[in-house]
Image (cartoon, rainbow, N blue to C red):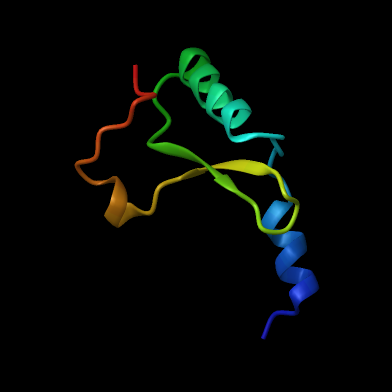
Length: 71
């Protein structure tokens, strides 16, 4: 069983932290402009660092769903 410290360390390691949800959503828009469609992304609050990270939607939720940042 993983320790709480290890879970916390792994949850933010290698991820960029955004101060607000609006900053994270702006980063998603910029990512799409620079690199094209990278899959359906969302900004989500991190329960450990009190910031926001970007992540892909779970597979069962992303099927058939339109995303407003897809341009």
